[in-house]
Image (cartoon, rainbow over all chains, first blue to last red; front, side):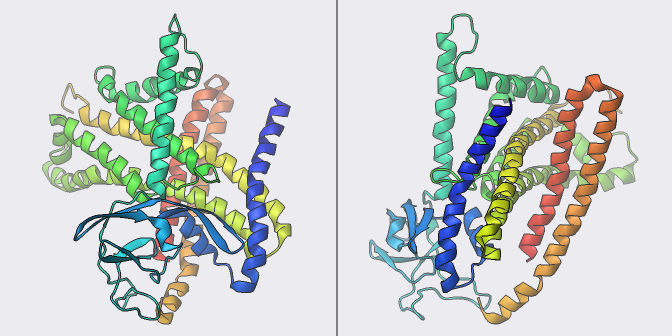
Length: 366
Length: 78
């Protein structure tokens, strides 16, 4: 037990070592260039991007290019994001199919005909770009992360299914030993108590998908090196779509009682009914919105905290801060391992709760 | 970003930080109360420890989420 804990800690320290090495390099090159902007760095890390930035080496960015897929006025245009040469302020123009594109703050726009101070972007008084943007279906960093997690999930559950085929008495073997308790947990502790014995089977696949998909994306976000580390479940569009699916399911499976309790709450006086109806109606939308923001905020905050602790080295401009910073970030990372599992569980549990409350049957009016 | 806008954005930073701090106080009180009550309950009924621990952790996650809502609002307001 003791040795195990020690090993785990050592592994954590080793993993964080990559940060220290990186920190050391960047300090040397950054200090004579310009002041290191922590907020910009953190925001860059938690946002989506058109290429997968791995590290800076000798002042050059090393990154993994990803395809840019645009639906423009003249149809489909595709090219690799490396053609922008890591440019993100609209000074490098990519010409494809007779059209010119620029990238500004990770958004792709049509380029202006003439450059203004080297930049092909024009701005309104509030400094938002006024260029027209094509529809962007690019495989961005987060889409790439999502494909990765899909493949991982398919492998994990494909192997689990095969493990059951192989075992003679239905006893889980191999990776199924890991997945079975979790599936049984979701069924017995989340689906059945919240939805009820009668209907739970219909929603179990959705709840399981939700739990494992969120969980694996959260975990992949915590791993700080190349194919992982995308802040997918800390992206509000991602959590928003998951919450939207929950919202649609809740709305469509809802029975008469559910709507009655929203628009004409039984058992309260009429003035109170009129007062409650708008509140309950807003509640329909607030529930999925709170689901969306809870997951987004928790995961983004986790990333921000870890990155801020690492940034302490840059802020203090001293390598001697590194040990404290690394120990703190290992500590936070260990807490985050717990938090990401809890957040996946909470999202699943609340979804089950909302579905359950929409299908609840009231035997007697109260 | 133009200079005037930059200055305006910068001047809100302390308020955003104060907001996040206030939220942290609230979350601290909330988590403290949950932890305290869970401890007390566990001391009274040690056989319920497992269940109490589980629900306490989930409740703490809920309280924490509220504080993080505030952090997000401060980030946006900044």
